[in-house]
Amino acid sequence: MNDIKTNVQLAKSGSTEAFTELYKTVYKELYYTALYNLRNEHDACDAVSDTVLDAFNSIKKLKDDEKFKSWIMKILFAKIKKRQKDYSNAAESIEENDTLSEDFDFENSDLKEAIDKLDNDSKAILSLSVLGGYSSEEISLIYGMNSSTVRSRLARVKEKLRISLSE
Image 1 (cartoon, one colour):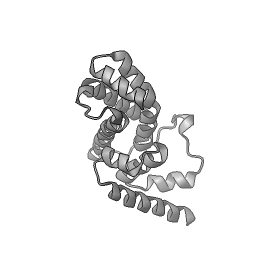
Image 2: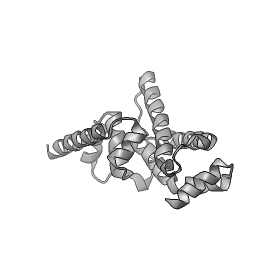
Image 3: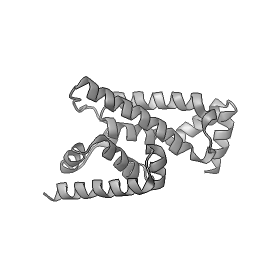
Image 4: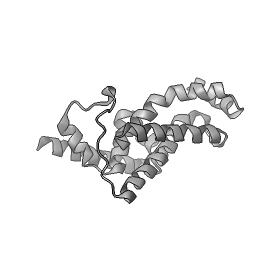
């Protein structure tokens, strides 16, 4: 965490090398979170690119240097939500991309089907918790809701998945 704080301070001073080091610590997590939520490699890459560009341009606005990961994930989720809203507004059926990364493949098709039935917010909270390993407090900062609300929504999502998988 100390390296992150140091790199954030250097990045705020204009060091592109420090920002690159920060990016290296989160790029896989950003990509897999975007891919999980958007279900399309191209959109995931675009969301991550937009996120990194916005983060680079606004790093000086980061108030708590130690919360870089939460801050950049919050930017990513704003990009994801915008793309999901665009999907809904266009009323298009987003077909699943057959070229999804082999590293990101569901072994259990029942689990995939159960997750696909979740709403976008539930998928996002689940991905942050399960894939990202974020605590409810961190998710509350990223997603802009109370941490107790995050815990109860996460419990409901897990219960819904449990019931769906037991059928």
